[in-house]
Length: 56
Image (cartoon, rainbow, N blue to C red; front, side, top):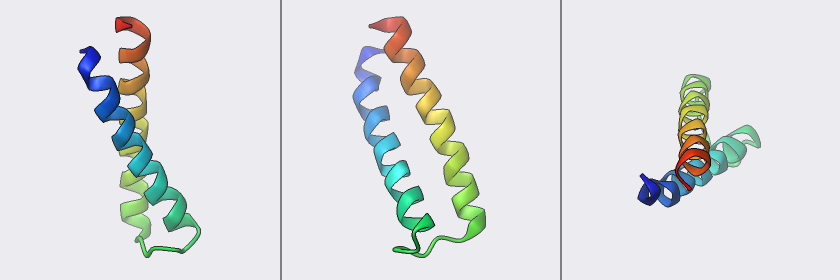
């Protein structure tokens, strides 16, 4: 489980970057995709945090 912390952190960083750039209109992201990316970000962030807290 410990080996998942770094990949989940990288995924979170990419999703946050897409959310920020989409919100600032730097890249074009539809509202529907923006909503699903936000949900995915929440799930991956919870997994990342839970693994970091419980397994490290």
